Image (cartoon, rainbow, N blue to C red; front, side, top):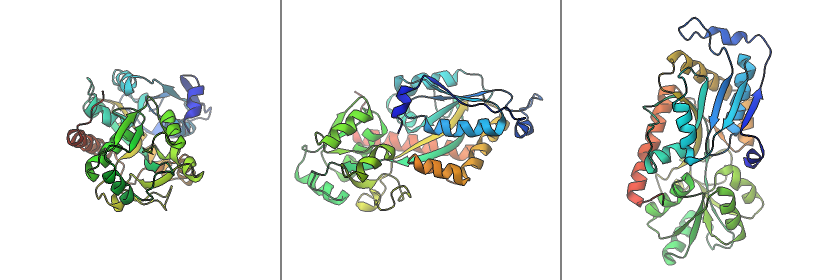
Length: 328
């Protein structure tokens, strides 16, 4: 999943609806004009665009205006972040934010603040990372891997999609909390890292669930635990790392929508309500599961999403300090 993204052009027209768009006429932005009155762009930086495409399609169907998903990769998300921060605060340019931005806020802080310079709208979906090991590793649980790592300090190797990425910090959190010495090997992208774990050149990785599940089901990897606080319906038989010997362990992948600061509250609430409306439908819940995502919870107001982002930044700040993790 997400690999087909590389084969598409840098923008994607999600949908055009020629209906009257009656539902779009009930949200004034204070100037007498209803929102939305034209097409909306969702900017995607690092990571897959599946969530942007999914909700973009639904926005177009509901509001009668096209939604364009536009990819602006590079710079660890700084290119997309800057583009949206400098866009007019009118709700027509949104950013698909993710865990990568909260990590970067700590490890590679730039001129833009996720809270100060943006308006939080809604959390769309979450997805766990899976602590995965090559079948040759003589450990079938988190506790066994901890024991193995303590017996072989510095000999076990884990891969990540690069320094300063969520899978990297998932490994650093494990090292810090379990008090073990395992070696980190960063790759430029997740796919080659996963290939080397599947081939046995590297022993461990924390890939996002959409990448790891097919390999687990094929028996090419062994799942030891999920990184979420509670078990996920996506893989209910897998225990959490927290329940497997490291209480408090939690790192999640997530996607949410944010807009430039000073976007009208009425517009923020309009988009938030639309996200939450679709999250309650069986169709969206099924499509999220098929893409290895969990639906965002019911407590999903703009303020609650902003609090979630603050908590994520604080968590990573503590982890980076405790682990001494660096980008280079």
